[in-house]
Image 1 (cartoon, rainbow over the protein chains, first blue to last red):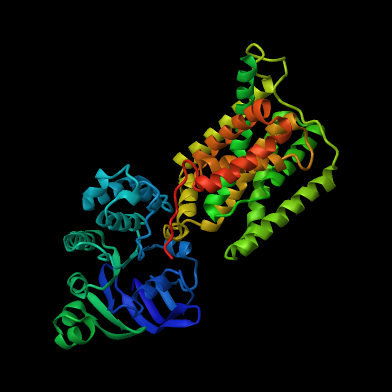
Image 2 (cartoon, rainbow over the protein chains, first blue to last red):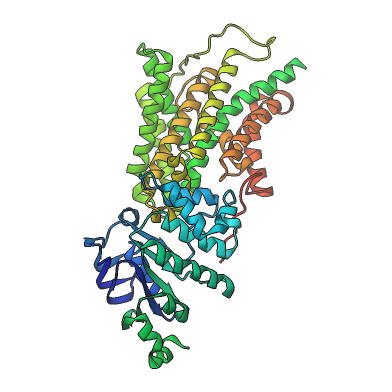
Length: 234
Length: 290
């Protein structure tokens, strides 16, 4: 099991957002976490990577990571593309790449750079440019590349489609499909655009006000009209 | 005409000192968004440490190196022991801690080493004025040392991965943690580096202004003016600003206001910049949504 979450509770100050979540993410492949605004999707990702106070059990490949510092969790192979992307706007694309691989000491960083250029050719053209001057889509690509350069076991993606034009979203999901098939990294995807996410995912969880209300293979959820109508709104 | 040229060169020499201290201020400001008021006092303490090493018979450059290392460690310790516990506290708490640090370090220096003014040696043999009387050996030597330090700092931040990690931690701590950077330690390293740079500045200026516990008080003001001119969040700007203030101060002292009122120039610059262009010449304009 790549990631196992049991009885996850988390919140901000006095406000509890998550009321005991249980879910798993399998090795390789995409798990989608869906739900309306305020359901607790982003909070779940923040809890997993130690950005907020958390109770419960989170284990990454059998090792308990609950309560550890974010940087330690990252060093254990968990990469997170947060809302707001988590790139370094003031630094160049190249520097963002170097930072993505900051904790790695293996000699394959360079060849991983090349791999990123294959997936994100646009970033190669922007190599020396300051990240803050990239277009929204390019910034999202940079954020994903930055996270992948950690060579993570698990990649958390928080709404990669947010704020992007439909065509760009198509492009990014196309790239993500390639990453899913070619890299073997496990992905936990949070997405408002349920239709798009369910196309990419193998498995999905549906979150409503801090509780998981539906779980199952993505294909089944996509076919189930009553779930679609009551929770996904399409 | 020679007098004028000399004023400019002497201004560049002291400007280098201001530039170093300004850089130290900016390094901590970038990471914490606070100005370390105690930067000057910490540099004075470092200079006294160097002085006691030299007095104990240690060769100058060995004492110089030893002081830089000790100052670095002191800087790291100050961050770990004093700043870390208040890192999430409001601005006023930080100001309080900085002022406390200033008073404690300043008075501790006087208490340990005494308040009498001391002569601090210059490592640059004073073989009389050089270049036809335009510049003294110490001015030339200290400017060279300052430039070497500034270039080393630049190379460190630009080309090493630790330097890059420190910049990343300063710009965006949240993202830095996500790539596995230990942000707390980067802050401590920044304090160490700032203290080490301040120490070099102290050792270079002490032969000129003589060594006493309040030696850096005025210099900190000039450095602050320099940092503000360049933009308090821009290291390169701070360095340029420091040199500019050195030259301006010297020219104003020699031709306009006289030496008595030189410090007023620094204060006028500080207020002028804050009123006219708070972000400095090279600083970023930060807008925040409310």
